[in-house]
Amino acid sequence: SEMCIRDSADVIEAFSEISNDIEIVKDGWGMAYIPDWGFNGLGNLEYARGYQIKMINQVDDFQFESVIAAPSIFLYNQW
Image (cartoon, rainbow, N blue to C red; front, side, top):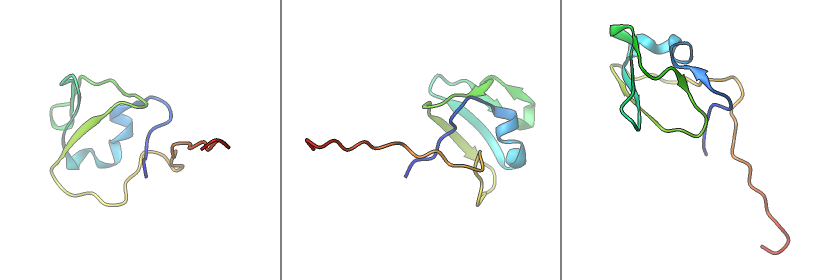
């Protein structure tokens, strides 16, 4: 299954609940959010973009939204 943010979300707000457990979040271009330094080079998390997160501590049961958006699958008669 796949979990994603349906709309863009401010990275600081999205990770505020677990920011003490995050070392760095970065995108494919190397832009980063580093909570300990108060640095946010990412701005917003964007739908359908990939991010790497290096954690200081393991976090269980965290999600961005209360409703998880699952990808839609369409089946047509010819399939």
